[in-house]
Image 1 (cartoon, rainbow, N blue to C red):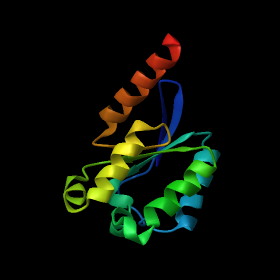
Image 2 (image 1 turned 60 degrees about the vertical axis):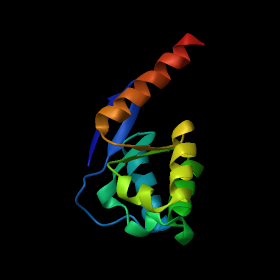
Image 3 (image 1 turned 45 degrees about the vertical axis):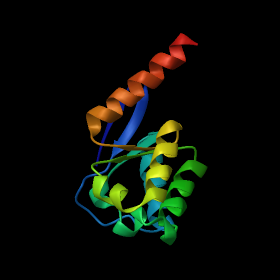
Length: 127
């Protein structure tokens, strides 16, 4: 795990190696990690998410993201989910809606996260 700051947002980046995130209790652990590092955004590599996360029928994605958002944190899922998107129209819709908001994002890589945060900061200062 490492922390950094981009566009004024403190981020906890999970390592790609480690136990899978598959339950609300795992999400609570992410909240604790974020708080202990004074971070407001948790960046999770796709590899760390239980494959069932991407099957919306399991409700795992909703439970995990809701837990994180309830604690006023942001979640960025980092990595290629193209194969999962091809299998599920519902997942495509979920990802599109999430990426349009401010709490949960699905991004290809860390430079995409940096770009998203920079664009959001630019919009905020333009107001």
